[in-house]
Length: 236
Image (cartoon, rainbow, N blue to C red; front, side, top):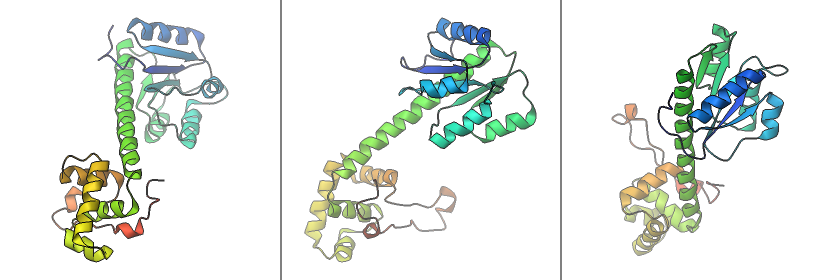
């Protein structure tokens, strides 16, 4: 038995099933391939335990006593908890499967399933969650850099990234071209942009510049978002 590829060392699988034998069997399976698992017997135990600040996924029985797995999924969405969910059940039907997948479930496994099938699903889910967390960390770092800019620097950055020349920016902001260049250089330094292309990408990441979809790229010009309308609360 093997995991498709090793998940991160701090990755955790939350297992929720009201059948003790199933919980113990899954716990043994995950331990055998070096995956940390937390075994829980109900939805109440899950929400009481909480969700670790680490890459994690949820292996969830659909037909739990008291509160169904679909109810748990809905409650997590209400709370803004968006970790991957792998549903399992011995009584699954097509409408239930469709409902779970439409609500964002990663997989829906019908018991009995092969152990390798579950391991593959969990490994894929943990890798996906790890990548999502890395993207959020990078975005948080970019936002921190952006908050260090003065209002004028952020305005120049947005104008420049939207395609305006230094002269056009100067006219729009009623400042000199020299001042525009100073603000632009400061913005690049504080944003740790190695080139102007990097600065444009960072501006797009922050939502300072809106671009048409690739399918419309040949038909429409880039949309310029006037930074004067953004103020300093864009990333609050």
